[in-house]
Image 1 (tube, rainbow, N blue to C red):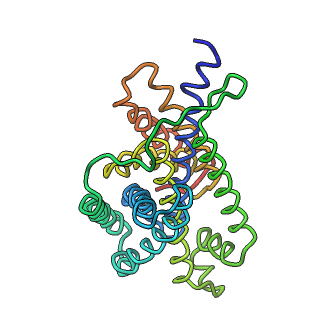
Image 2 (image 1 turned 180 degrees about the vertical axis):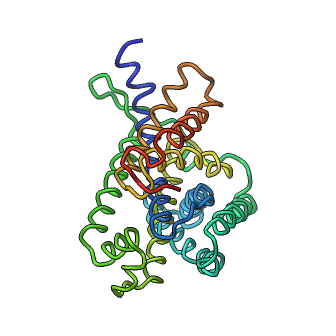
Image 3 (image 1 turned 45 degrees about the vertical axis):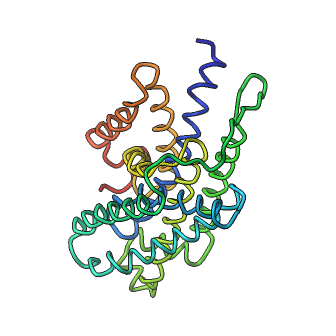
Length: 290
């Protein structure tokens, strides 16, 4: 196989999918850092965000790219509402109860998506998107948009966490919750902000997945395992780890298509997840242990 063909058919799609996984993994790592529990509804929240963007396109008549901010805001607010209704009263209980509850929330969200939008495959736009030729590299416009947007999201989030007052408060809560509370950090505001950001990142990951593939009611469940694998591989609690983990998982999944059918490419993410948990549970960037 020629190197150009390898890049076009495996490496570029792997990087694009990896960047989508990275967005979801960042949200997961934020939730675990602040709330200290895994969130099994993360994938279905991404699907909800993707279908909310579709609603903006079909109902309001927004252009496909303009529907993303609407989906981010709406999903972020829904995430805050879910926390207030279902998770907040479990805050002082064992974290495993919240994790199990999040599985129930995932089923609820998926049912809502299926009732409102049905179970048929949907698309943001019809027609064939032809790739552009860049010195032999064939890259679609939507892939360029996806990668550029992911870079902007990551840079903006890092700047927010390192430069802003509330970003520093979130980092303080992640490092030492008790000390942060004694220092006057408002726990309720930090939790709400965490859900707002994580929900928005969910919507972005679901939206870009829909833009690059198609919309299905089960799409959130299908990306949950790769997203978790990305977060754990990079190191839970590490933004840079989530990005690196997402890219690695995406590339490995695409490379696995050289030896296994596409229906089973999630096996590669599962294998990496098991290997990391056995060999290096803190991940590549020495994060927290689930």
